[in-house]
Length: 110
Image (cartoon, rainbow, N blue to C red; front, side):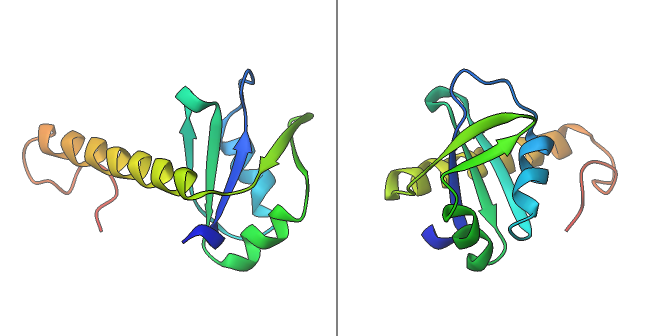
């Protein structure tokens, strides 16, 4: 999974998730973008390893005129990303439960 993850340093920057996703899409299809606010990082999960590899060949990613440093992906980053994904999934499923009724209304049903 490590080869699918791109880690950006966003500390002190206020950037839109979609702007970051769009900047990364030129390297390949992006599956997930997770912000790790505590550590000032953004994790971009590509559908294919080729996308992440191409992005990692750059030293920086330009998003809305900001140069974001690209950081070497570590096991720690992977763990953080997986935890963020897990809590995002939990959040969306708890929203669905609160919706009451037929469950199909809330969120994107799989």
